[in-house]
Image 1 (cartoon, rainbow, N blue to C red):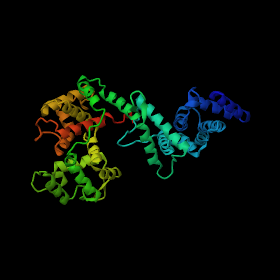
Image 2: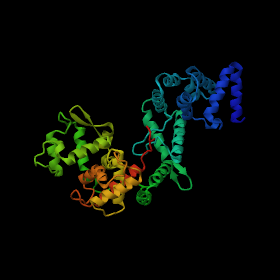
Image 3: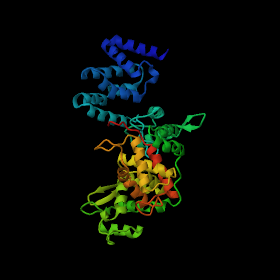
Image 4: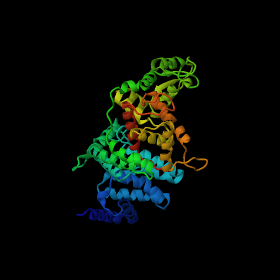
Amino acid sequence: MRSEQVVDAALARLEAVDRDAAQAARAAYGSLTAGEGLEVVTGHGVADFLWYQLPTKWLCDLDEKLFLAAALGELFTRLDMPRYAAMCLDDTTAEIITAYETRGRSAGLKAYRAALSGSGLRPPDLPGVLEWGSVMGTEEAAAYWSASAALEMAIAAGHLKPGGSGWRRTAAEISTGFLHGLHNNTTGSTWLQWVHTERLQRFADSRAPARARLAGPLADRLVNPVPVPAGAEQVIAPMRWLLDHAADGAALTTTGNLARPLVAEGCRRFDWLTTTGNPRSQSDIVELWTLRDWARQAGVVRRSGRRLLLSTAGKTVHAGGTPTLWRSTMDNLLGPREAEQAAGEAALMLLLAGDDLGYRDMNEAVADVLAGEGWHRQSTGQPLTGDQAAGLLGTLRRRLRLLGLTTQDRLGQSARLTPIGYAAAHTAVRARALRPRAHPIG
């Protein structure tokens, strides 16, 4: 018997005892499957219908929405699909639908996301592997839904038990294994490689000729990460030093700066110069506050009272050795704001292309790239100038100088990447190219 005949028979049995419930179940099932049949029904799809589509897209009152969910659950019971039936009839579903109706869309969406995360059906973000975008391309969406199917199979088999001890770690392992699994038999490529290729194509596409000239040729070079270079531990020694102290609970002043003995230690160890020759405060040392801001942006440190501590992510990075610390540091080489990141990306692409540009020429070249991408001065609406691009590049230039990643000795000079600087720039641009895509409006 074909699947739709099975569904029709189940609806007929339901109609025999409750005509209204059968009518509601038929309508809900039709919306859930969009006419494509029982084969397309998945746990994630049922969750999306119950926790988003039904409460936001159906123009009926709360009681009717709850009745539709319950009726769909009765249908799944008759189809011998107890897990889907349980989702429809569970108190969580009623609570989420009610949240939309009584507390508004934002509250409903918050409850929906929390329930989906706790269901085990949502592929988790995997730091260092893949973080899912709120806006996905075709390949990423296919990977997401296929990963969800892999999680659902694990739940059905009893290998993944949402809510149980260590279940999130198990879900991450299943998702990671899936992404590294074969997607194309002809090329031998993995799901992750297909997602990366799609994101790199998006990175290379540009309406601006100046950016297209840089990004197009570079995209192919970003397919694979460059190895952590020899000498990386020495280059990132300042970040290691800061994390070592944070691991012990670095003392802070009442204003939140690093304590003076630690400031003096950093100056001695890394030969950081001060304007007075007698370091008194973190704010006197450009390198030190640059380092602290960088670590904060990377999310590896946190402040607790008058102590600087490792964050949860920082503990993982600190324990992970040079490769982990290198990736964490260079993935966050660009500044924290989107404008700084766009400017820094352009500058690094110019450096990776080998363009020999002086300080002002670099500013003008970056301004040209940004103007083509639609960046404008807020007050006048005119394209950015070289001087404004210089302001956006300040964070990147300080970080490059801090770790000696360019040949630049003094501010204002032209700069070229050192060999290790090339690896750092490649890592930073690749991280930005492969970043998840977010919806521009919230």
